[in-house]
Image (cartoon, rainbow over all chains, first blue to last red):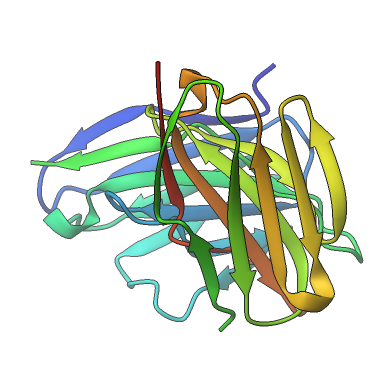
Length: 114
Length: 109
């Protein structure tokens, strides 16, 4: 049973054309994350939501934004994609308790820029 | 931020061999996870193990939090074990997972 679902699996966009990646979850977790993974590198956190509270990593470019309209859905918006934004984008969720809980990842969206 | 070092960076095994992957980290952690990333890019959660020992089939993991390292054991390796193994940790009160650079494993028939 898919628990963290990312659509689409592959996305192609043009240089400078805005693109939105989506993530949904059936786990009812209150924390959702977006990671960027470039080729042959480790995933790197862009930002996360704790419920509706948005937490941006210090080095996340302004070009990247996120929306979380409800518990189940979270979107990653890239306003003006450059060639350097080609990467795998991974969504993850976790329960936000007093104790840190494991993160569960989706299958990712591989973004290509033409 | 917390530093995560994995070794070895690359590993080639013949099917049936055993291996140990290591993860060292520079600070106390509240979360440690081992992942397997398959050739299709899927990140599979293997263990959530901030301390102690766990086993799941041919895989087991041990984290010695006081000495700041974790080990992943793969026994009787299979070709489907090929891929990249990542160790990721979170420290303090934060949620962000900091990933090591991974160990790239190739299991040959």
